Amino acid sequence: MRFKNTEGKYIWHLNVASPVLDERGKIAMWVGSTTNIQSLKEEEERKGEFVSMLSHELKTPVTSIKGHVQLALRSLDRDGDSPLCAKLRPSLTRIDQLLVQLTGLIGDMLDLTRIEAGRLDLRKDSFMLDELVSEVVEDFRLSHQQHYFHLSLETGIQVIADRNKISQVLINLIANAIKYAPNSDVVDMAMATMGTHVLISVKDYGIGIEKNDQQKVFNRFYRVEGQSELHYSGFGIGLFLANSIIEYHGGSISLESVKGKGSTFTVHLPR
Image (cartoon, rainbow, N blue to C red):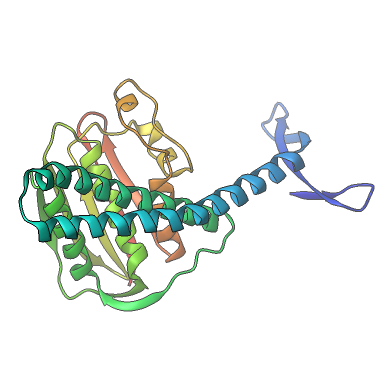
């Protein structure tokens, strides 16, 4: 909270209080401390402004590079299957894929700063949720042809939400299901209505998450620590963003997991 100092300025403080109990278990007094954290708050603001500025500055050159790469790929397609084209096409295709990942990361950084500032804008429209889920899964089927995506979808479910943001959440959950299940090629998805909500679950058969880490995975920058988790890259913002987006829609994301047996993330989205 903020307290006014002797100069009349409001300064951020962190307050911690603990009760002292008497022999009957009743509160006899409170012991607390107040710490000035104004400099930490200002540093957070500077970091947020820097990330936002950096993200905006990166968007223009990345978009330009992607345009040139796609132009080069189209030129190769017109020139046929010469030896030079055969050598260049795989590299340009890979560059194009990496640019898509980079564009997604920049978008996540922008969303992160907007969420922290409490101003994530949602563009809500009415759409068929089962159609969106099918579209997202079909994209993964094309890009991950070695995986099996089992769908059990209730059809005809219409919601009013930000279609692009909900798509972003689904992509994040499915990508995690693939990433953290290196020894499994199966992802199960289900969707059904329950009362006033639609439930969308994404289940993998991967490394799983310890009980004491299950709520922390939705925290910003949190990454599960452990020997097996060291092999997985990431900044720890994907689930934070996904959960924040759903919370902005008035919903939530729950998690059920058993270490070594996989995880199930369930989106609870209001209808």
